[in-house]
Image (cartoon, rainbow over all chains, first blue to last red; front, side, top):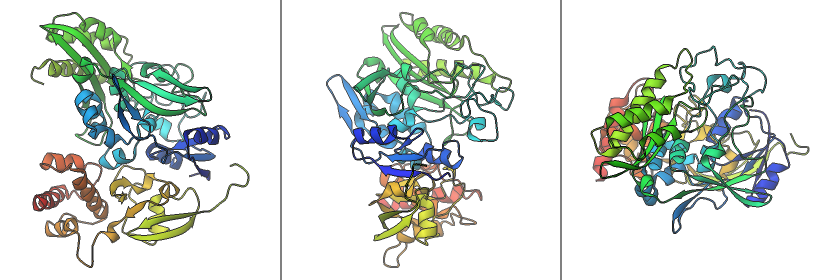
Length: 328
Length: 161
């Protein structure tokens, strides 16, 4: 680990000021991603600003929504009664991520900024446009079984590794960001940036801004949601494919539908085209399959990850079937 | 590095029930503090990258990975390691159960396994065997003592009912 300066912030405003002073400075909340990448020298912040004691840990009920503090621990959010009953996809996604120890440390704000698990990003001896802009991408012709098939570019095919953010994408979460000019609100889908030619830019967050909360609105389609995660082992593993889905039926007709995919996109992947297929259609296997086809249209698999296309389609069908009340 | 950044910083935390003060560099992890500065080698360094669970300790009664925590972020926290689990010379029930059920071979992962199991029990995540396996999935045992580890955790849970 490179030497760095450690400073403790006693307010969100102080945290932002301490960060802004030093280019490349990083916030420290749970530490689980940052310390890992600092050891690998992928992250080399000259200053680390400890925000872990800031009072941003609550899960607060509002009239039409819930506000989750950016420093709420993943395990606390998953165990919150409102989250579990009104946003089951989020509770399930959080419980499926990492391990008990990591969920006790990882925060919502930190988890939103979780970095990719692409091995070519995590090892400094490889070429990586995300870690070293302009250096090239060794994943393109390397071992890319875990890599993305949606939202990729010639510069980067690194998969967004998260579970929580995939659920938040389906649940139309908003990220509340504090900056120089007060607080701004960014829809989750606008928070993440596609890699394009600048994969080093991952989110809409500017240096010196601070995520203070995530908000979720109550809705029937959020209440009837689930998270399905498929991986190489039963627990403590990143997704090969995951599906966050919401489905509301009226009679036999789909009144509302939400679909987001994990493990396959360079960002948490909201499947708008699939939702359009579902909404207004008669519920059933045929329309689930058509939605699944639509969700994967435009997928660009690499030599080792072509299996993800059909795996994702089948996962979508299974998630929708489960929500509709059929056998999983 | 910004100019005049201090190379060492004082840190006080409550380690196994005692307030301890150290003078450390910012890059010292909680794991290295426990093992090398406090001289408590019971907490093990396996992967040192948050993948094996050998360094599991309880911070303010919650299980976390000491290798992915900067020590300076834990000023004033209560940290409990395997050395602080027995009370008045009596093994914690989880320690006794690991011996009773032969839940180890080489023993390197065992302190982390035991702290993780104690934490999981407190979290109320220890139900049937599948729930135990899920709750303990962050602790890798390369000897493969999993069957007996699950038996030990199950026994402590049943005794607590």
